[in-house]
Image 1: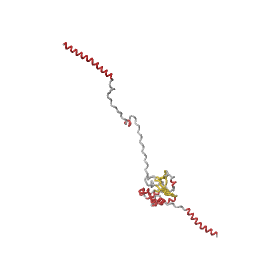
Image 2: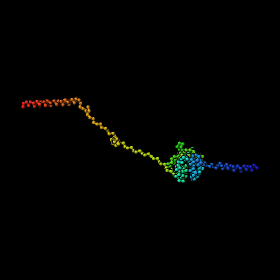
Image 3: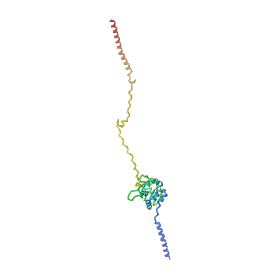
Image 4: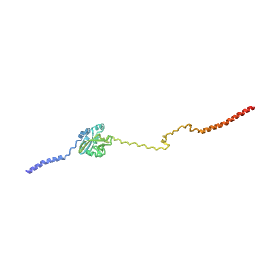
Length: 262
């Protein structure tokens, strides 16, 4: 009787234990990435993924193994829409996959990582469709070689290991699809300094001020002969004139006497 009861209890317990063990070991379903994007302000980007079969299937399969997504905000997608329409179907799929990396990064680990990262668009045999993650203080940025600028992480949309989703302020543009950013032009080299001109020659001599020559002064009081020299001159003139006067008087007297004798 006791043996039968024990056997019955074992028969009832074993199925229940097996069911409990199965539930414990069953992996949890990955979070719905696109649904999280819609709630986090990336509705337009989620709609693009859903409308692209290749991108949608890749996102779904990558979520189970670990994934970090950088979803552009609705405003960023709206601003980028004209350029997105010009891409081919393969280009659109590659652009969407370019916004996710096949590794889970929590907010803390994201801020401690710097360097080049592969994306879901990266071909396993080629080093393409990569971007550079950089931390500048508390700001996490994503840079590429394209001219689309730098994307900045603005908020955490979802952090549920093995999936994290972060909102960024612009569409990240791969250089494989868009023109490279122009390289910064270097400043022109300064012109060599000219040799210093020698004294009296060259530019310095040409710019030397021409000396101004004053007009020659006319005679003034300083150039006149001294007073005593003037007096001497006058005396000499008087002395030279007196003998001439006496000689003339004598000649007249002689003429008068001759007239009387005649």
